Length: 87
Picture 1 (cartoon, rainbow, N blue to C red):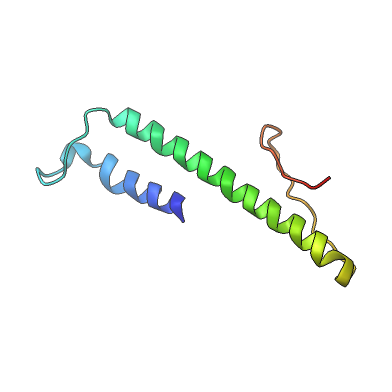
Picture 2: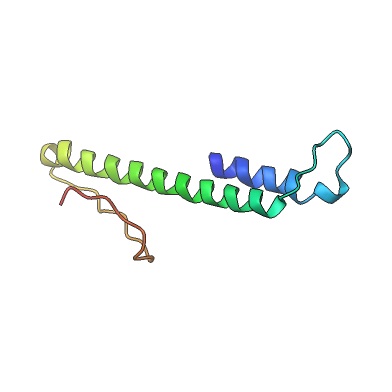
């Protein structure tokens, strides 16, 4: 998953930048890179959540009437995060 990539990048590159050999390019704006990684990771997780919501809604719409069952929507503790719904 992309978040694993960011975690590994942070672990092996950003945390060891002070001890890096000359073969690893040094970054002048480490904090800026960290902030961009966090922003990309958050957007990626938003997209993943929307894909999950879409899948649940499509399963309920298509398979719900056939099977007589439905999958509950995601419930989040954070009200600022949108959960997609057909309703």
